[in-house]
Image (cartoon, rainbow, N blue to C red; front, side, top):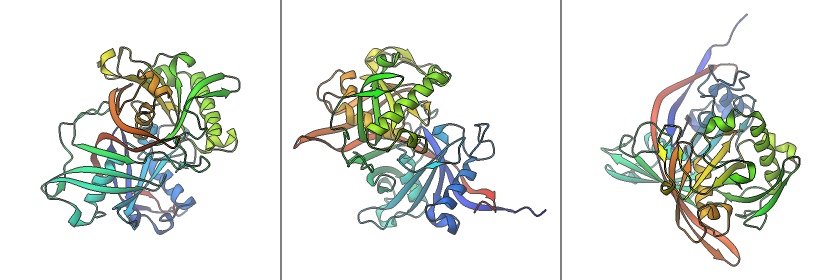
Length: 396
């Protein structure tokens, strides 16, 4: 029997924020995978090591968590006033599925550095020393992200003293601006609040009725109060992820929230849209000990937030969900805003399982509709490995 030889594909393994993933230039992918479709999905699944019934992704580049089962495809942008087009694929761990329905805010921090280092940004836009401003078109949701990338000696600066809870070592700070972050999700009419309300009663059959803020900003997110589901907002991963019944409840809440937001036509479709929407629960500030053993005091945060990602409690906070948090916090009357004490605010520091994070956003009420023109937060990014990934030749 003849077995196919492996092929190699140029790739870079990068950390961005509290996530990491495999980055490709579109032009380096096999021809069949340069267009959306089954060939591309099959390739990325094999690169990451999915579907894996053992849920370990041993035979691939994935790390068996939603934060590490990610892929990015970048190309030089043909759009006016943009440098690079950025497409994100969230790879399911145990099913043969790549979710293209949303962005990854954490890996967004690595897009600018990768684009500069791989010739996707015009040289005349890159300072020898200083800060390069990279204009990113986020192709999944049709939004613009501006990355401020530090440069030293003509190269991307990756080392530095910026510390990010959820990341072990300090690195160089990359500031991100998410412009007009209300997501233009199909079926949601492009509205920041697709139900037309800041707070709704979300009826979840078999579980209960919950107050919920459902928002399209950064990524579609369903916010509920921690106390309404029996939590305090100080929980770490094991308190949720070791409880199959809790995970099932959260997935059911997510499915009915997606239906209420107009993201799916029936609850059965939620299983094919695992990346979005997110479910998060909020609470007022309280003392807790983060997953690293660091004590978080009441005065260290404005509120507490815990968020689910791909069916599990996230170890820190998804970058796109942080945008949703900052946006909702800026709008008086949302559950996020109320958990933070209410009133008007332009920035919020929230506690998550790994520590704290600050995100800024400014909201205005225009003709009865809330608008947020920009959300800002800082992340860091670093190349972990570069060269080639290899996959069996019969994959594409």
